[in-house]
Length: 406
Ligand code: HAM
Image 1 (cartoon, rainbow, N blue to C red):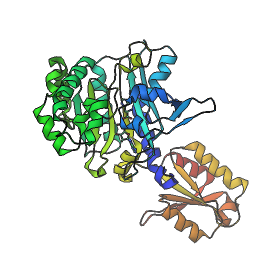
Image 2: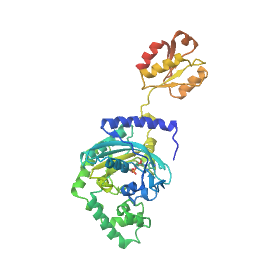
Image 3: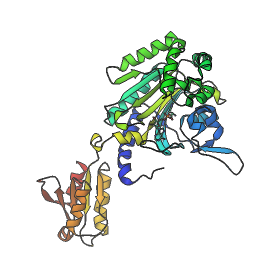
Image 4: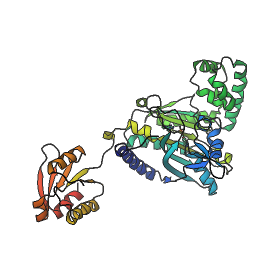
């Protein structure tokens, strides 16, 4: 569970502000749900057969002996909240963000507390919503400058297709248990679909001889997938991956993941899909649902600050001991005039030289200096820190004007 320091969070903030503008343009609104939920919510949604519920939940009994868990993901909580408000029959375009908890083996890109930004579209049947969400993924990647990525996508059919395939796969595999890798025996028992996800060569070889999931999926589903992929092939690298089943039980229909080669073994920085049955499964009314979640730590790892236009920074230097009401008034007026600029006020007293060094180190483009003489004459020095940059003397009025128009 890593600590996050200012230097880590700088990129996060820029990323978050870009995301907010995208959500705004898609008319998608924020929802916040608690970090703790009843354990049952996750076993009934993410599923008892999933690793997330099986091995990774942080659960404990509260004072009333009820089992609670730290949320491992956000979709189940969002659906619970909508059911509780009895709003399953309305349409919702929601986003959320925050920490999630999974007791995984920590490694690069995999933490026990990590952060997701998620989007859930509720009340929209298969169709335009899929296009809208893939478009949103493309917009996000474009706005934050990620170009080297692949969208893997698949169609899991409806609940019926899933069920009849699972039955058929189980009947096929039972007489071949000695050929099926040991690690996959439990998967077959708890959720046969998950066997498709196996990393074991012997299992994959066996699967080739058995029933194929694609044969159980309707032609309508297959052509929907083809059309969806066809609409985006000119815009990004999008590939059908028939082995993509995802690690959460609630999916039916379209599922997708976005991967980057730059990330190493944990290469998915976004995952999602349709889960139309979850509301019913949790005791609510029928409600269509589709969404995705971004792993913030992973997406941040592939961003570089050059991708993100940083706000301009101006240093505010008052050498000596003149941190008086008057100089603060100027800083205050500057911030009110243009709050898109970072005004980096150096609070520690130090020589002009050391404060200028600090301004350079902090990537300030300009500095405003108020020395003894300027202070007396109600003036400031405006200094351009770029190579060969000039400096000029401005009145306190002029500096506000300059700052406003930067
Ligand atoms: P998920 O694939 O389990 O899906 O997680 C989404 C993303 O969270 C992953 O692609 C990954 O980037 C990030 N992530 C997952 N586990 C970790 C970890 N231990 N450390 C760092 N990052 C991690 C879901 O959670 C679904 N609720 C997504 C969804 C929303 N489906 C429909 N709506």
